[in-house]
Image (cartoon, rainbow, N blue to C red; front, top):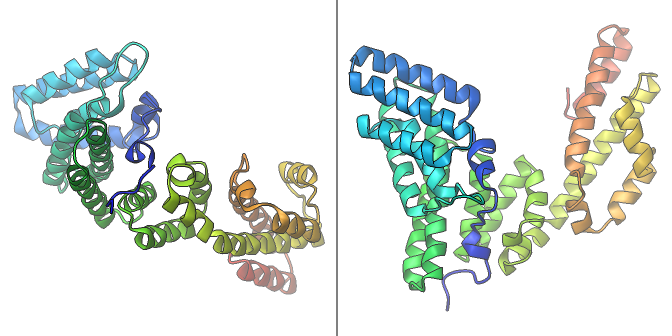
Length: 354
């Protein structure tokens, strides 16, 4: 019997985002990167090494080139940086990103094995410098996540090259161990939990995958909508689709509680004659759910997958709306008599939004 889930598209690795993966969706950008660079600069200043100074200059040049889409030139600069200071975590991280998924119409550097090597070095060097540069925690977390991704990509290449299932299994297990390390040091890395679910599905560990995914959607229900439109879950995997379907009772119960909270707050805002935000009025009118009865009727009768695949997640809309309404009530209660203040507090406590 196969030890791996058949049908997972490219073993869960779809490289279609190009530089968006590198430049847009990853955590170690802008402010975090600036803080890391500043902390590393302080460390380097104490060393007074010309080679490290030159390495920093090459690394900064690489970052500029990367930002301008000059990928081959960025790689050249980062390689020069690590030739002068092989322990530079930022240069190693950026090389890993480029070799993982820098693909466009003009060039491709997709070499997951190289990416894996650079991410592994980044993890090692970030660990070594963590006490002196605490912001490297972000670098370490990101590198662990991307290292696991690179390993899964390597398993996909192994499969395409006809390597044995045993060899694929070993690489996927290594990916799982790496993502486990990430979640040990950063338990709140939600994308890491989602990724671990996908690996567990590939390994046919359905109950473990279900438990992992349920704990994730309890924190952030949006991942259920993400999974429903993710081919690895809903189209190419029997286990993944079954997990989504098993969560329908939880989803409907959770959505029902969100709806009850929303209308409790909405009715309180109307009762106290407060101004309902205009965008909320438009949404209520557009969806024809101005009353509790209409809202509960609509969402209780709507198909599960249709609810999951709404253009804008109903969970997102309700969560945002509930915060808006509770904010209106909280602001109003401060200038109200004690009896009104107590009533609003009671509404907010029941809604768990006080």
